[in-house]
Length: 261
Image (cartoon, rainbow, N blue to C red; front, side, top):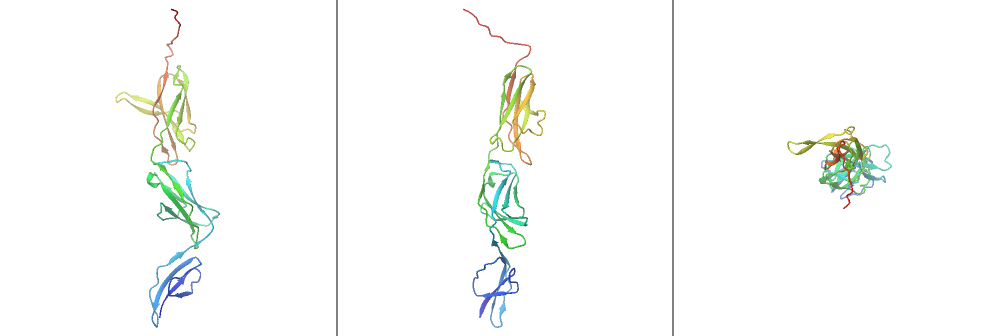
């Protein structure tokens, strides 16, 4: 006589089911088995236990934080697994990034300095730590990381002005409203190698929420640049190309007269 014994820990810890082949189970729990044969019966050692989780109706949803429409290489993002109507129950989370299952206890799947290689389809599900219940896998969430750097464009108005007047700088980036702060600089020429260094304008060290900056009392020709930053830690764009404001000399003037022939 040959047979096998399958022990069920969670629901019937004192019972054993004797079966000579595969069995179907309808309850979550911890299961293990052993084989036996002969009379009297000789038993093998018990197998390693496996846990069967019962699927519950709570839905898992992958969300992106910050929820920006375009993510750039080098930014820091967090993919979170939200359990609908999950209550205060302690959950553990499983992630399946680009078809590779990965266990992760934290709710958030943090990615620092994201790159194009992180692009892909992500799924998650939640399991109750102290019970054998599990949500199903979430709907797929597609993450796309741009391999380009954002390039701001600076405009100045007016570009020609009288000495002592004010000039307005405007900095624009793609997806202008997506959490950007703007940093403003004055160009400082370096005659030794025909290049420029950048000097932060007053009040710009922490960036401004507004995408415009007014320089008051412009008295001479000057160049300006801007860049944008967002996130924590701050991710910075490239600097814009310099844009110049041309100022006339306050001690000279030009006039236009008509000549009759």
